[in-house]
Length: 433
Image 1 (cartoon, rainbow, N blue to C red):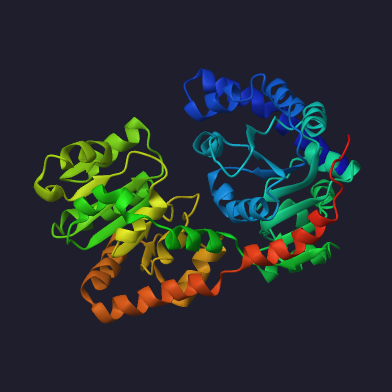
Image 2: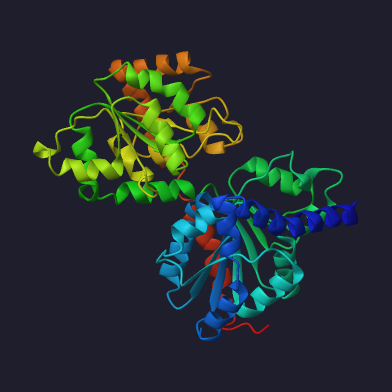
Protein backbone atom coordinates (compact mmCIF):
# COMPACT_ATOMS: atom_id res chain seq x y z
CA UNK A 1 0.00 0.00 0.00
CA UNK A 2 2.98 2.33 0.45
CA UNK A 3 3.73 2.43 -3.26
CA UNK A 4 0.08 2.88 -4.19
CA UNK A 5 -0.12 5.90 -1.87
CA UNK A 6 3.17 7.21 -3.18
CA UNK A 7 1.99 6.88 -6.78
CA UNK A 8 -1.33 8.63 -6.06
CA UNK A 9 0.50 11.45 -4.29
CA UNK A 10 2.87 11.89 -7.23
CA UNK A 11 0.00 12.04 -9.70
CA UNK A 12 -1.94 14.62 -7.67
CA UNK A 13 1.04 16.88 -6.99
CA UNK A 14 2.21 16.56 -10.58
CA UNK A 15 -1.18 17.52 -11.99
CA UNK A 16 -1.80 20.38 -9.55
CA UNK A 17 0.40 22.97 -11.34
CA UNK A 18 -1.13 22.01 -14.69
CA UNK A 19 -4.66 22.37 -13.35
CA UNK A 20 -3.78 25.71 -11.73
CA UNK A 21 -2.35 26.94 -15.01
CA UNK A 22 -5.48 25.88 -16.88
CA UNK A 23 -7.79 27.52 -14.35
CA UNK A 24 -5.69 30.65 -14.40
CA UNK A 25 -5.95 30.87 -18.17
CA UNK A 26 -9.74 30.60 -17.80
CA UNK A 27 -9.86 33.59 -15.49
CA UNK A 28 -9.54 32.10 -12.00
CA UNK A 29 -7.65 34.85 -10.17
CA UNK A 30 -6.42 32.68 -7.32
CA UNK A 31 -5.08 30.01 -9.66
CA UNK A 32 -3.42 32.65 -11.82
CA UNK A 33 -1.71 34.16 -8.78
CA UNK A 34 -0.56 30.67 -7.69
CA UNK A 35 1.11 30.14 -11.06
CA UNK A 36 2.50 33.66 -11.52
CA UNK A 37 3.95 33.69 -8.02
CA UNK A 38 6.06 30.62 -8.75
CA UNK A 39 7.64 31.79 -12.01
CA UNK A 40 11.41 32.00 -11.57
CA UNK A 41 10.76 31.54 -7.86
CA UNK A 42 13.76 29.35 -7.10
CA UNK A 43 16.07 31.72 -9.00
CA UNK A 44 14.76 34.58 -6.87
CA UNK A 45 15.22 32.60 -3.64
CA UNK A 46 18.72 31.52 -4.60
CA UNK A 47 19.67 35.10 -5.37
CA UNK A 48 18.37 36.31 -2.01
CA UNK A 49 20.05 33.54 -0.07
CA UNK A 50 23.40 34.12 -1.76
CA UNK A 51 23.52 37.44 0.06
CA UNK A 52 22.19 36.13 3.39
CA UNK A 53 24.63 35.67 6.26
CA UNK A 54 22.48 34.95 9.33
CA UNK A 55 21.38 31.41 10.28
CA UNK A 56 17.81 30.75 9.25
CA UNK A 57 14.62 29.11 10.48
CA UNK A 58 12.03 28.06 7.91
CA UNK A 59 8.33 28.39 8.80
CA UNK A 60 5.64 27.18 6.41
CA UNK A 61 1.93 28.08 6.45
CA UNK A 62 -0.71 26.85 4.05
CA UNK A 63 -2.63 30.11 3.95
CA UNK A 64 -3.70 33.16 5.94
CA UNK A 65 -5.49 31.26 8.71
CA UNK A 66 -2.47 29.09 9.39
CA UNK A 67 -0.26 32.17 9.37
CA UNK A 68 -2.39 33.76 12.09
CA UNK A 69 -2.06 30.50 14.01
CA UNK A 70 1.71 30.47 13.65
CA UNK A 71 2.27 34.19 14.06
CA UNK A 72 2.63 34.16 17.88
CA UNK A 73 5.39 31.56 17.58
CA UNK A 74 7.09 33.44 14.73
CA UNK A 75 7.16 36.62 16.78
CA UNK A 76 8.26 34.83 19.95
CA UNK A 77 11.20 33.28 18.06
CA UNK A 78 12.14 36.62 16.55
CA UNK A 79 12.03 38.32 19.93
CA UNK A 80 14.12 35.63 21.63
CA UNK A 81 16.56 35.22 18.74
CA UNK A 82 16.87 38.52 16.83
CA UNK A 83 20.00 37.29 15.05
CA UNK A 84 18.12 34.44 13.39
CA UNK A 85 16.46 35.09 10.04
CA UNK A 86 12.90 33.86 9.48
CA UNK A 87 12.09 32.39 6.06
CA UNK A 88 8.30 32.29 5.75
CA UNK A 89 6.56 30.37 2.96
CA UNK A 90 2.94 30.07 1.86
CA UNK A 91 1.20 27.57 -0.37
CA UNK A 92 -1.84 29.71 -1.12
CA UNK A 93 -2.10 33.18 -2.68
CA UNK A 94 -4.66 34.13 -0.02
CA UNK A 95 -1.85 33.89 2.51
CA UNK A 96 1.08 35.18 0.51
CA UNK A 97 -0.60 38.15 -1.15
CA UNK A 98 -1.93 39.48 2.17
CA UNK A 99 1.25 38.92 4.19
CA UNK A 100 4.05 39.33 1.65
CA UNK A 101 5.17 42.51 3.43
CA UNK A 102 4.88 41.11 6.96
CA UNK A 103 7.63 42.71 9.01
CA UNK A 104 8.09 39.75 11.35
CA UNK A 105 9.82 37.63 8.71
CA UNK A 106 13.02 38.38 6.86
CA UNK A 107 12.14 36.49 3.68
CA UNK A 108 8.65 35.65 2.42
CA UNK A 109 7.97 33.39 -0.55
CA UNK A 110 5.51 31.05 -2.13
CA UNK A 111 6.54 27.45 -1.50
CA UNK A 112 7.77 25.92 -4.77
CA UNK A 113 5.53 23.06 -5.91
CA UNK A 114 6.42 19.79 -4.18
CA UNK A 115 8.85 17.76 -6.25
CA UNK A 116 12.18 16.20 -5.43
CA UNK A 117 14.08 18.72 -7.57
CA UNK A 118 12.26 21.74 -6.14
CA UNK A 119 12.63 20.57 -2.56
CA UNK A 120 16.34 19.82 -3.01
CA UNK A 121 16.96 23.24 -4.54
CA UNK A 122 14.88 25.09 -1.96
CA UNK A 123 16.48 23.43 1.07
CA UNK A 124 19.96 23.87 -0.42
CA UNK A 125 19.27 27.57 -0.97
CA UNK A 126 17.83 28.49 2.42
CA UNK A 127 19.86 26.00 4.53
CA UNK A 128 17.47 26.10 7.49
CA UNK A 129 18.71 25.34 10.96
CA UNK A 130 15.21 24.29 11.93
CA UNK A 131 11.80 24.03 10.23
CA UNK A 132 8.24 24.53 11.46
CA UNK A 133 5.03 23.58 9.67
CA UNK A 134 1.87 25.17 11.05
CA UNK A 135 -1.21 23.02 11.74
CA UNK A 136 -1.11 20.91 8.59
CA UNK A 137 0.12 20.50 5.01
CA UNK A 138 2.41 17.56 4.56
CA UNK A 139 4.63 17.90 1.50
CA UNK A 140 6.48 14.63 1.07
CA UNK A 141 9.64 15.76 -0.69
CA UNK A 142 10.25 18.66 1.66
CA UNK A 143 9.64 16.51 4.73
CA UNK A 144 11.81 13.70 3.42
CA UNK A 145 14.76 15.98 2.67
CA UNK A 146 14.53 17.62 6.09
CA UNK A 147 14.77 14.19 7.66
CA UNK A 148 17.60 13.05 5.39
CA UNK A 149 19.61 16.15 6.18
CA UNK A 150 18.79 15.97 9.90
CA UNK A 151 17.06 19.33 9.97
CA UNK A 152 14.83 19.42 13.08
CA UNK A 153 11.23 19.61 11.91
CA UNK A 154 8.23 20.49 14.08
CA UNK A 155 4.47 20.71 13.61
CA UNK A 156 2.88 23.63 15.48
CA UNK A 157 -0.78 23.66 16.59
CA UNK A 158 -1.38 20.37 14.83
CA UNK A 159 -4.79 18.77 14.82
CA UNK A 160 -5.64 15.28 13.60
CA UNK A 161 -8.87 13.41 12.91
CA UNK A 162 -9.45 9.68 12.73
CA UNK A 163 -10.76 10.02 9.15
CA UNK A 164 -7.38 11.21 7.83
CA UNK A 165 -5.28 8.81 5.71
CA UNK A 166 -2.58 8.58 8.42
CA UNK A 167 -4.90 6.41 10.48
CA UNK A 168 -6.34 4.20 7.72
CA UNK A 169 -5.25 0.73 6.66
CA UNK A 170 -4.04 2.14 3.35
CA UNK A 171 -2.13 5.06 4.90
CA UNK A 172 1.44 3.76 5.16
CA UNK A 173 2.77 6.41 2.78
CA UNK A 174 1.11 9.16 4.78
CA UNK A 175 2.39 7.68 8.04
CA UNK A 176 5.88 7.86 6.60
CA UNK A 177 5.39 11.62 6.23
CA UNK A 178 4.72 11.89 9.95
CA UNK A 179 7.89 9.97 10.72
CA UNK A 180 9.85 12.88 9.26
CA UNK A 181 8.87 15.19 12.12
CA UNK A 182 11.07 15.58 15.16
CA UNK A 183 8.20 16.64 17.41
CA UNK A 184 4.49 17.43 17.30
CA UNK A 185 2.81 20.23 19.22
CA UNK A 186 -0.90 19.42 19.00
CA UNK A 187 -4.01 21.30 20.07
CA UNK A 188 -5.83 18.61 22.04
CA UNK A 189 -5.47 15.20 23.65
CA UNK A 190 -7.52 13.45 20.95
CA UNK A 191 -4.87 14.32 18.37
CA UNK A 192 -2.09 13.08 20.64
CA UNK A 193 -3.96 9.81 21.19
CA UNK A 194 -4.34 9.25 17.45
CA UNK A 195 -0.62 9.77 16.88
CA UNK A 196 0.28 7.46 19.73
CA UNK A 197 -1.96 4.76 18.27
CA UNK A 198 0.31 4.62 15.21
CA UNK A 199 3.48 4.59 17.28
CA UNK A 200 4.33 8.31 17.40
CA UNK A 201 5.31 9.23 20.96
CA UNK A 202 7.21 12.50 20.41
CA UNK A 203 4.13 14.66 20.89
CA UNK A 204 2.95 17.26 23.41
CA UNK A 205 -0.49 18.75 23.93
CA UNK A 206 0.23 22.48 23.99
CA UNK A 207 -3.09 24.01 22.90
CA UNK A 208 -3.99 26.37 20.09
CA UNK A 209 -1.76 29.39 19.47
CA UNK A 210 -4.69 31.29 17.96
CA UNK A 211 -5.90 32.07 21.48
CA UNK A 212 -2.64 33.91 22.10
CA UNK A 213 -2.92 35.66 18.77
CA UNK A 214 -6.43 37.02 19.29
CA UNK A 215 -5.56 38.12 22.82
CA UNK A 216 -2.58 40.03 21.46
CA UNK A 217 -4.79 41.78 18.89
CA UNK A 218 -7.42 42.66 21.48
CA UNK A 219 -4.88 43.92 24.00
CA UNK A 220 -3.18 46.16 21.46
CA UNK A 221 -6.12 47.46 19.46
CA UNK A 222 -5.89 51.13 18.48
CA UNK A 223 -9.49 52.24 18.08
CA UNK A 224 -8.43 55.71 16.92
CA UNK A 225 -6.99 54.15 13.77
CA UNK A 226 -10.49 52.99 12.83
CA UNK A 227 -12.42 56.12 13.78
CA UNK A 228 -14.57 55.83 10.65
CA UNK A 229 -15.97 52.58 12.04
CA UNK A 230 -16.88 54.35 15.26
CA UNK A 231 -18.42 57.17 13.24
CA UNK A 232 -20.57 54.66 11.36
CA UNK A 233 -21.70 52.78 14.45
CA UNK A 234 -22.40 55.87 16.52
CA UNK A 235 -24.55 54.92 19.52
CA UNK A 236 -26.30 52.03 17.78
CA UNK A 237 -26.16 48.40 18.87
CA UNK A 238 -24.27 46.61 16.13
CA UNK A 239 -24.20 43.19 14.52
CA UNK A 240 -20.81 42.37 12.98
CA UNK A 241 -21.03 39.55 10.45
CA UNK A 242 -17.54 38.30 9.63
CA UNK A 243 -16.19 36.08 6.86
CA UNK A 244 -19.62 35.62 5.30
CA UNK A 245 -20.49 33.62 2.22
CA UNK A 246 -23.63 34.04 0.12
CA UNK A 247 -25.39 31.33 2.14
CA UNK A 248 -24.69 33.23 5.36
CA UNK A 249 -25.87 36.59 4.06
CA UNK A 250 -29.09 35.03 2.82
CA UNK A 251 -29.77 33.82 6.37
CA UNK A 252 -29.16 37.14 8.15
CA UNK A 253 -30.26 39.81 5.69
CA UNK A 254 -33.91 39.59 6.78
CA UNK A 255 -33.02 40.22 10.42
CA UNK A 256 -30.92 43.23 9.44
CA UNK A 257 -33.59 44.66 7.16
CA UNK A 258 -36.35 44.33 9.76
CA UNK A 259 -34.30 45.86 12.61
CA UNK A 260 -33.44 49.26 11.24
CA UNK A 261 -32.42 50.61 14.66
CA UNK A 262 -29.37 48.35 14.73
CA UNK A 263 -26.22 48.93 12.73
CA UNK A 264 -24.67 46.08 10.79
CA UNK A 265 -21.12 45.58 9.55
CA UNK A 266 -20.61 42.81 6.98
CA UNK A 267 -17.14 41.58 6.09
CA UNK A 268 -17.45 39.05 3.23
CA UNK A 269 -14.91 36.25 3.03
CA UNK A 270 -14.46 37.05 -0.66
CA UNK A 271 -14.08 40.72 -1.55
CA UNK A 272 -14.24 40.34 -5.32
CA UNK A 273 -16.29 42.97 -7.11
CA UNK A 274 -19.03 40.43 -7.83
CA UNK A 275 -19.30 39.42 -4.19
CA UNK A 276 -19.36 43.01 -2.88
CA UNK A 277 -22.08 43.87 -5.41
CA UNK A 278 -24.08 40.88 -4.21
CA UNK A 279 -23.88 42.10 -0.61
CA UNK A 280 -24.98 45.56 -1.68
CA UNK A 281 -28.07 44.00 -3.26
CA UNK A 282 -28.89 41.77 -0.30
CA UNK A 283 -28.64 44.43 2.37
CA UNK A 284 -30.84 47.50 2.13
CA UNK A 285 -29.50 50.95 2.98
CA UNK A 286 -25.90 49.73 2.65
CA UNK A 287 -22.64 51.42 1.72
CA UNK A 288 -19.17 50.15 0.96
CA UNK A 289 -16.48 50.96 3.50
CA UNK A 290 -14.32 52.67 0.86
CA UNK A 291 -17.23 54.97 -0.04
CA UNK A 292 -18.18 55.56 3.57
CA UNK A 293 -14.67 56.80 4.38
CA UNK A 294 -15.02 59.42 1.66
CA UNK A 295 -18.56 60.45 2.60
CA UNK A 296 -18.10 60.49 6.36
CA UNK A 297 -15.64 63.36 6.20
CA UNK A 298 -18.46 65.55 4.91
CA UNK A 299 -21.07 64.55 7.51
CA UNK A 300 -21.53 66.39 10.82
CA UNK A 301 -19.43 64.34 13.25
CA UNK A 302 -19.70 61.39 10.88
CA UNK A 303 -23.46 61.16 11.53
CA UNK A 304 -24.59 57.69 10.30
CA UNK A 305 -27.07 57.72 7.43
CA UNK A 306 -26.75 54.04 6.45
CA UNK A 307 -27.64 50.87 8.29
CA UNK A 308 -25.13 48.42 6.82
CA UNK A 309 -21.44 48.85 6.13
CA UNK A 310 -19.93 46.41 3.61
CA UNK A 311 -16.19 45.93 4.19
CA UNK A 312 -14.43 45.86 0.82
CA UNK A 313 -10.85 45.32 2.01
CA UNK A 314 -8.77 42.67 3.78
CA UNK A 315 -7.19 42.98 7.21
CA UNK A 316 -9.74 44.82 9.35
CA UNK A 317 -12.00 42.01 10.52
CA UNK A 318 -10.23 40.99 13.73
CA UNK A 319 -10.57 44.57 14.96
CA UNK A 320 -14.14 45.16 13.78
CA UNK A 321 -15.54 42.82 16.42
CA UNK A 322 -14.57 45.41 19.03
CA UNK A 323 -17.63 47.42 17.94
CA UNK A 324 -20.02 44.46 17.89
CA UNK A 325 -22.81 43.90 20.34
CA UNK A 326 -23.24 40.45 18.80
CA UNK A 327 -21.07 38.66 16.24
CA UNK A 328 -22.20 36.38 13.44
CA UNK A 329 -19.40 34.18 12.11
CA UNK A 330 -19.73 33.02 8.51
CA UNK A 331 -19.07 29.65 6.94
CA UNK A 332 -21.43 27.65 9.11
CA UNK A 333 -24.04 27.44 6.36
CA UNK A 334 -21.50 26.16 3.82
CA UNK A 335 -19.88 22.76 3.32
CA UNK A 336 -16.48 24.22 4.22
CA UNK A 337 -17.53 25.10 7.74
CA UNK A 338 -17.29 27.99 10.13
CA UNK A 339 -14.51 30.57 10.22
CA UNK A 340 -12.63 31.88 13.26
CA UNK A 341 -14.94 32.40 16.25
CA UNK A 342 -12.11 33.49 18.53
CA UNK A 343 -11.62 36.89 16.91
CA UNK A 344 -15.04 37.93 18.24
CA UNK A 345 -15.11 35.96 21.48
CA UNK A 346 -11.88 37.57 22.72
CA UNK A 347 -13.73 40.89 23.08
CA UNK A 348 -16.48 39.22 25.11
CA UNK A 349 -18.94 39.23 22.22
CA UNK A 350 -21.54 36.45 22.01
CA UNK A 351 -21.27 34.51 18.75
CA UNK A 352 -23.98 33.04 16.53
CA UNK A 353 -23.21 30.78 13.56
CA UNK A 354 -24.56 28.08 11.27
CA UNK A 355 -24.62 24.31 11.82
CA UNK A 356 -21.36 23.26 10.13
CA UNK A 357 -18.82 23.66 12.92
CA UNK A 358 -18.05 20.24 14.44
CA UNK A 359 -14.56 19.81 13.01
CA UNK A 360 -13.37 23.11 14.49
CA UNK A 361 -12.30 22.49 18.07
CA UNK A 362 -12.40 26.14 19.11
CA UNK A 363 -16.01 26.46 17.90
CA UNK A 364 -16.99 23.31 19.80
CA UNK A 365 -15.28 24.63 22.91
CA UNK A 366 -16.89 28.05 22.72
CA UNK A 367 -20.32 26.47 22.30
CA UNK A 368 -19.75 24.20 25.30
CA UNK A 369 -18.65 27.19 27.37
CA UNK A 370 -21.89 29.03 26.59
CA UNK A 371 -20.30 31.79 24.53
CA UNK A 372 -21.90 30.89 21.21
CA UNK A 373 -25.14 29.61 19.68
CA UNK A 374 -25.82 27.36 16.69
CA UNK A 375 -28.67 28.13 14.31
CA UNK A 376 -29.82 25.56 11.77
CA UNK A 377 -31.85 28.06 9.77
CA UNK A 378 -32.83 31.71 9.49
CA UNK A 379 -35.74 31.46 11.93
CA UNK A 380 -33.60 30.02 14.73
CA UNK A 381 -30.88 32.51 13.91
CA UNK A 382 -33.28 35.42 14.29
CA UNK A 383 -34.56 34.05 17.59
CA UNK A 384 -31.03 34.00 19.01
CA UNK A 385 -30.22 37.45 17.67
CA UNK A 386 -33.44 38.92 19.08
CA UNK A 387 -32.74 37.41 22.48
CA UNK A 388 -29.14 38.66 22.54
CA UNK A 389 -30.13 42.17 21.47
CA UNK A 390 -33.05 42.53 23.89
CA UNK A 391 -32.41 40.30 26.93
CA UNK A 392 -29.61 41.92 28.94
CA UNK A 393 -29.21 39.06 31.41
CA UNK A 394 -29.02 36.47 28.63
CA UNK A 395 -26.54 38.65 26.75
CA UNK A 396 -24.21 39.26 29.70
CA UNK A 397 -24.03 35.58 30.57
CA UNK A 398 -22.99 34.68 27.02
CA UNK A 399 -20.55 37.60 26.77
CA UNK A 400 -18.77 36.63 30.00
CA UNK A 401 -18.61 33.00 28.89
CA UNK A 402 -17.04 33.97 25.56
CA UNK A 403 -14.35 36.14 27.14
CA UNK A 404 -13.53 33.61 29.85
CA UNK A 405 -13.23 30.77 27.35
CA UNK A 406 -10.55 32.60 25.36
CA UNK A 407 -8.64 33.66 28.47
CA UNK A 408 -8.69 30.14 29.87
CA UNK A 409 -7.14 28.63 26.73
CA UNK A 410 -4.18 31.01 26.44
CA UNK A 411 -0.55 29.96 26.83
CA UNK A 412 0.16 27.61 23.91
CA UNK A 413 2.92 29.85 22.56
CA UNK A 414 4.82 29.84 25.87
CA UNK A 415 4.55 26.06 26.13
CA UNK A 416 5.86 25.60 22.58
CA UNK A 417 8.67 28.10 23.08
CA UNK A 418 9.81 26.39 26.26
CA UNK A 419 10.65 23.32 24.17
CA UNK A 420 11.84 25.14 21.04
CA UNK A 421 14.33 27.30 22.94
CA UNK A 422 16.14 24.17 24.07
CA UNK A 423 16.31 22.97 20.48
CA UNK A 424 17.42 26.30 19.05
CA UNK A 425 20.05 26.81 21.75
CA UNK A 426 21.53 23.43 20.83
CA UNK A 427 21.78 24.18 17.10
CA UNK A 428 25.04 24.89 15.31
CA UNK A 429 25.33 28.47 14.08
CA UNK A 430 25.40 27.32 10.48
CA UNK A 431 24.27 24.20 8.65
CA UNK A 432 25.88 23.28 5.34
CA UNK A 433 23.97 21.22 2.83
